[in-house]
Length: 144
Length: 144
Length: 144
Length: 144
Image 1 (cartoon, each protein chain N blue to C red):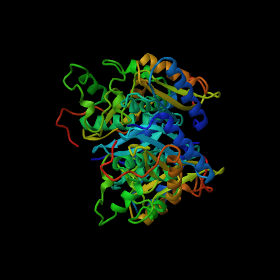
Image 2 (image 1 turned 180 degrees about the vertical axis):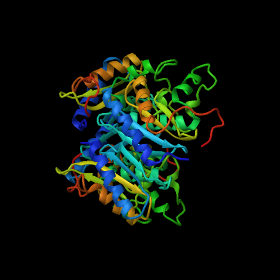
Image 3 (image 1 turned 60 degrees about the horizontal axis):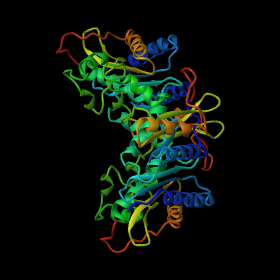
Image 4 (image 1 turned 30 degrees about the vertical axis):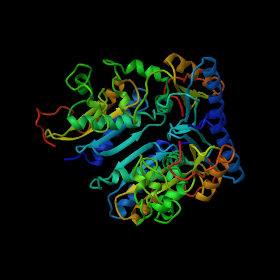
């Protein structure tokens, strides 16, 4: 079950509107449930370094079916997942990546946002998910 | 001089319309003049393998300021650029990538299309460039 | 808006003079606003391992439009950007990389220096920027 | 035995003069005998894709102590080195890379040039080597 392009575009449009309200310049990526890129949008004057971070946040969120910031809590020094960022050709584990879950509780993709503070990145990701689903998955094993 | 997001979206929209007319499912990428991703769009049911090819075609076209197919003519066995695809983390040198040149003759970015025959990929790339510029650069050295 | 080769060479020459004053052996890299390498200079007897670090510092500074050391303050364990170094094929987030901003407040490139203590690396980077611009960007969103 | 920075700069300056005579825009790289980057110069309006090619040509020439075009003759389909470009993180095996050999017959580095036809790239590489050495090595095993 993959997010379709109509949903991906709706998510990006909603995220962009929120980014503009916040006065930020964002890179916004949507991936499907296979962690493959579906759509991407770089606002003018967004950081060039945020291209890869936005995409990696989206991939990270779908790789593990949880917000990127949740993984970051576990990957600190001494934590159970310390160093997990070395896997999968590089993860980003601070906030700004959120799963997209459909009305049946199925993980259909994720959104990743980068370009400002992590608080703003997260807020824009939340806005992007809103029109197309939720970010809370049922207890694992959830379905894809 | 970089393609802006409005132009990138206009290029993708035009490319998508042409892809639909042709009954094809395409991945469409736009990069700026620094070969950094600006926008990306994967139509539903497009090949997953075309994600990377579309992006590499766009990068290749801006890397050398020419259509990807022109490079491919020179990179055949026995040709002067045989093996050039090993550079820049992988080039794609068959048709489907085209430079975007503005009204002043400046290279501002490129489009890359993948998902069907190279003829269709090229036709969709041509359609994508049409509303935002041309693909013919002045004689090198052109400006960026 | 890209740093031109005359500016890149002026920056490297100034950086090199400062490095010699400090009795250090440095690798010095200049990238344009697309994070693509413009010029590079390795002083005799500089560390071989500093080649990649100097280039990555320059790229990191232009990726996010700020001194590399500023990012490092945010990427410590427990910090909001912990692990950001895994993005963009590897960042370097300790001092020695500085943006180059022109008289109009536009980010046109960056310099990266590696080969001694981070204090010396930073001092040499400062000297490199001086003849060609400043490192302070206007409040984001700045322009590229 | 490594090319020093004075020689690297002399090689780049000579190469650049020849490039200007030919009306071309080149990327010019010099590596030492360890294949590590010593100096790099991208002329304004040179192809962005030539950055990596120039560096890879220089590395390739020093990796095997011969002009890149000689390796390309052996790496064609059916040839004894077919596919060698997959090694060493990517080789470039068409003309434009030349060894730099000192007066004692020792390989001290190499120059790589990219930005125009392979004939022009080679001519500019020849001009770059001229003030600092020759490109002909004694019969292998030569010394480094």
